[in-house]
Amino acid sequence: MKGDYQDLVDELSTLLGAPATLENRDFRLIAFGAHDSDDDLAMDPVRTRSILTRGSTAAVRSWFEGFGIARATGPVRIPAAPEAGVFRGRICLPVRYRGIVQGYVWLLDREPGPAPEALAAAMEVADRIGVLLAEEAKAGADLSREFLAVLTAGRGWQQDMAVSALRAALGPAAADELHTVVCVAPWTGEAPATVPGAAAVCVVPGRGAEAGPGQGAPDIPGGAGAGARDAADGSPGGSGGRGPGTGRALAVLVRLRSADVLGPAEAVATRLLGSDPAAGGAAARTAGGATASGATAGGARTAAGAAASAAAAGTARTAAGAAASAAAAGGARGTAGAAASGAAAGTARAAVPGRPGSASAAGPAAGGRAGGAPAAGGRTGAAAALAPGGAPGGPAAGIAEPGRGLGGLADAWAQASAAARAAAAQPRLGPVARWSAIGPYRMLSALASAAPADDPAARPLLGPAQRELARTAEVFLDCAGQAGRAAAALGIHRQTLYYRLARVEQLTGLDLDEGEDRLLLHMALKTARLHA
Image (tube, rainbow, N blue to C red; front, top):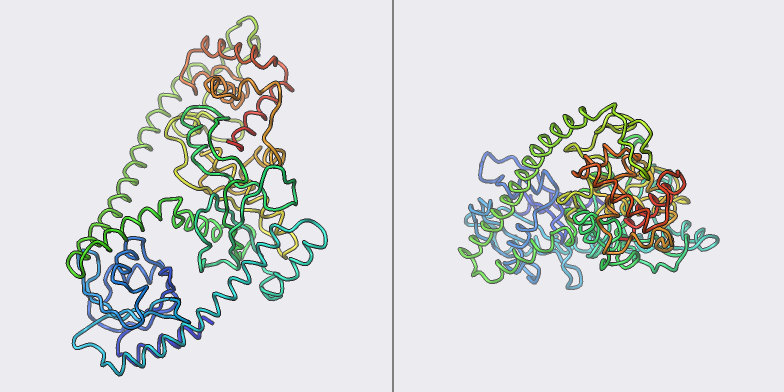
């Protein structure tokens, strides 16, 4: 199919005497003609980005759509706009099938331009391309339906039938390839028409909490907003967010070359997180579209495009600057934290009556972590995630363990969605988390898949009124019960920590000197995060 597109694009380039570029309706590059011109203006920033990244930004898309290309039935001439990165004018040939736009053919415009007869012949070629794109879209829709059936079918013969249908749709060779499953959740839009490197894509609806494992789609994170709120206010179990099963997720079957290299899956997840409207793409497209639509043809559109481009560039620079500033600040905090930790290292915890572990010696030096490095900025474990500003800014993604064959796709989807839930619940894991890297959330997600945890002992601590105590308990348990580390991570005095822990014991009736009581409370707090 790709070869057919390239042949047709080459035919268009020869027919019109200019290199042609073919994109689908989402402005994803499909094929482009050879470029042997010495004209520096021919490869302007917009065209260069389209070829190198196989796509265009939301601002560029909105700017071009402002000229009515989605409604046009014939060639559309678009003037140059150097301020927007369009150094040369364009001729757009809309690619349609039965009246529905399937994509666009782009040509660099030049005086006097193609003759009307040549453009009419080019539109006939564009119609042939439209037939191919429509057939591919139908095949993709069929594949999405079969993929969704495999992920949501129950156990037994329904699952076997769904796997057989997907195998037939993919073909035996593709079905037996090494692959993994990626979950992006929540997903607010429709499934992308194409995802580079993906064998199949579908949108999975959320399900109610009453469904058990193997009955419909696994719980989908309702959104990152609840996790962000909890991270900022220090509560693992906030209220007011959407519950599990109320959102939708995007499932992607990604082909791999090696089970040890998940780079292609991570690239797909990162790209999708940046394209979904929930991650801000829709806002950019809407703002750009409104500006372009309100502007007059030519100059005003040029100004709108320039503003959109500048805004996008400014946002990127701002984000980069913020990241650099945060890194610098984190480094300073880490240095201070290390100094304080070093002073406390090796000392015995203060003997305070009733305090858990008050007579035991301190473990590893404060700020150190068993089997790993300290958290960024001197914080450890949950403290790094619970600190204000550590929350995720949008949807999260999870990646399952690689596998061959289609029989294990339902289990792989459960892994990927659990990893996405963990990334949304614990910002230090995300925004893209592998199933193999989420630690205790592998087990917690399975335990919490059917319904929120409601243990009577932990229940008093999970209400909105006790968020500070819940945060204190979680950090203390994340620090393996080491009071010095927990107090440093929370930024409070040890006596304040002991007072809060005493209140936790009073509210829950648990004895934090007992291992099983600690385990119960820790699991309840982490599970509450998954259901936030």
